[in-house]
Image (cartoon, rainbow, N blue to C red; front, side, top):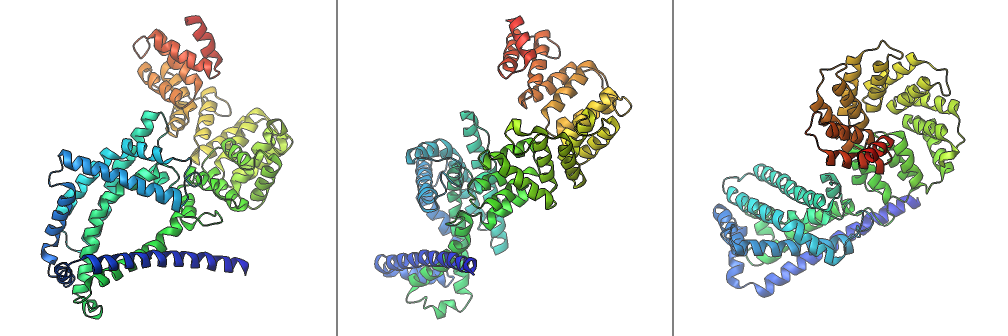
Amino acid sequence: MPEVNEQLGFLATYWAYAFALASAFYFAVWWFGKHHLSQESKDTLTLWLWGEYESTWAHHFCNLFDAVFGAKHLSLKCFLRSSLASVVAVLLLYVLFAEILGVMGGRALGDLSLWQAIVFGAAINVIPDYISLFETRWLLRRFERVTSVLGQLGVLAADAVFTGAIIWLGINAFQFLRGDAPLTAIEMLAMFSVFSVFFYSTFLTSVWAWAYCISTWVMRLFSRSALSRVLDVENKPEAQVALVGAVLVFIAALVLTPVLKAGEHRQASAFDQMLCSVFGGTMCLHIVRFTEDESQAFDYLSQYCESNSDESCIGRVLNFFNDDGDKAASMWRKSCDGGYAEGCANLGAMYLLGHSFGLGVAQDDAEAASFYRRACEGGSAFGCTDLGAMYEKGRGVAQDDTEAVSLYRQACDGGLSEGCYNLGWMYKRGRGVAQDATEAASLYQRACEGGMALGCNDFGVIYESGRGVAQDAAKAVSLYRRACEGGTLEGCYNLGRMYRDGSGVAQDDAEAVSLFREGCERGYAGGLLQSRRDV
């Protein structure tokens, strides 16, 4: 019963919030219309609500747009006004996000000061907003020919996609110049980044297209229904416009606010839960950050683990539990016993590593193998790969290369790059299966294409040696480069060798030394020895 009352109170709060916004909108529009509109303007508004201007409304609206921004887009006047509108839009959204919704520093990873918002907004938004404004100007001219509601909705949807693409490119260009990782459109849409302020502000240029469509729909609503008579359009047109606008504001506030703000108790909204379920991975980790309910947060961590290695997952879980290995192990055991295969795989990894790595269980190879088996049988590709590694090395089970090959194949067929890589390694050396360099090359290729940097490195070795594929030094260089950029130090060392020897690439001692040094600084011994020798 307390939970029901809490939910009802939460709902009532948003109803009251939406009603207050709608009421404020109504009284503001009504007061302005009553006290500041001339009788001639009111008569014009009445005619508009009766539909007298429907055939020429697109032309009149475009004139209004030109009056605000100038008739010529490629002019200093338009650029300056567009830039001013960009900065104002950023400031308004900054106040909304930081002060009203309170997402800065919590939902949005990081924080921005007011001055940072202004400076970043000027750097990021001015050009994308100017381009988006041009697109909006072009759209408004098209509305003269697009008159149906469905057609206009289609145009608005296309405008949203185009505008989003423009600012997404602008933000990531800014990120690139700062040396930061790119952001996905979903992260910005869901306000998991402070750059959401700049992302959403660009859409304010689309307000003109929306304003045209909504004004057209309101005109039709009044002129083609009994509303023009019931609501006294002839004598009080400003009050009727205020009323319809207030209803729209009420609906928008009621629908959007719970999506944007997860509530006083910092629980994930239904929108957040949908993001984690649909996109998984990083989306789930974002939601964990602002979810205080431990059980719910662990569910999101589990969904993250479905698409990431058990080592990465264990690290995230330990971080969530503040390095309390006992608590993490307990939670994984519960999830494993509940039928969650990845929970079994992660518990197996904890047993494999044990207390020496700060985990909550004693090291036990046999127990690790047991949990990996449960994970593999439950459909976890990670579980199959790690169990295969235990059979290959004879840890916790009798050494059996044939069984290892079978398990690696199962993981590879399940789409796990690590499984393909390990299976390729077995084919290359003829362990548990007939030696086959061509099959090894194919499996390394699958691992590389699946995003495994080490697979790219070993696939490069095959191209360099010409075993299993036609020898191709240039192709080997390309693969070593992918491996190095993916974080595999051996790939950096091998790429350095190719530059040193001028194999597959122009000979370049400086680049070779740079790559060897990179391997040295990141801990690769081959890079250390080679760098010292060449320097």
